[in-house]
Length: 370
Image 1 (tube, rainbow, N blue to C red):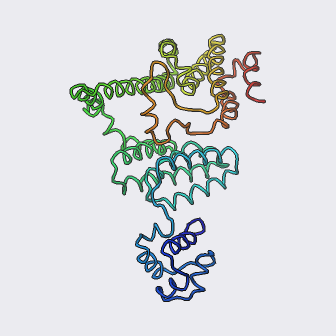
Image 2: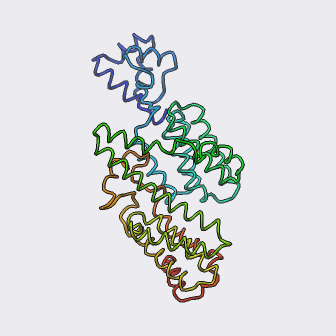
Image 3: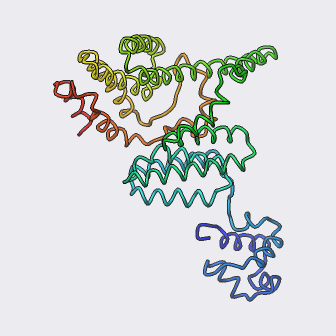
């Protein structure tokens, strides 16, 4: 109870009631010295006395001791931002213990527990050993299961189920993931139409601003999903280079049309990197280096920005309210302090063996090695 507010609360409530320590002690059947020790944080009341105190001041025990079982969205975001920064600046094990302590304290605050799972997924690779990484991921799976089994919010449970599948995939449990997601992801299911139906309902009720906003959000997410699917396609068709070349060409055209390098430089950088690795693996030196230059530009845009934020642009100009409702708002899932380290590691990929001695590749590598 070191971080609770019981001592200050007893003092404040006693002063509001205009009673002395002795009067409070008489009511509770304890000594004045006991009350004094509570207020000086030298000791705490036992459970039965806590119940009496709460009844006397007409509040719950949680309110009396200052315990908050549920956090606000803003508190969750502040915790996430601080813990993400701690991973970049403080010893890994120290940050891990802090997260575990918060998880135990707020075990029934399911939105917060879900974001701690996200935090684990985005930082588990920083653990020193593979065994430690697996342990962290397995802990996150247990937290997801706890949310699914106990949370009454179907949206949070749905997010926890998806996150559990993603973490399970990292653990190599592919068959389990198929069992989790295959029934819900069948393309013939009508659930995929619900967004469009909602837009039509907004139109019919005259809520045109909501309809426009919802369509724009869907268009934005469809664009990001198309990018992610294209990168998955490149990974699946490594044995069909001509198909991959067409995929890269088509996606680059879409990226230019939507100015994705500025709109979402993180996702654009991932695509350019994957294209560069694919070109290099197939001996296409010129194309690989050009993709790496585009990758470099996106990364520099991220590094030179004051913060790595999710945002819209002049075309996607109705995203702010939606972004504000996201669990992390416009925050990036990881601190940008990790970016140079990740770039250096990614450029050591064996796929770049054919171009690693070129002056342009060395320039880019040295740029992120300073």
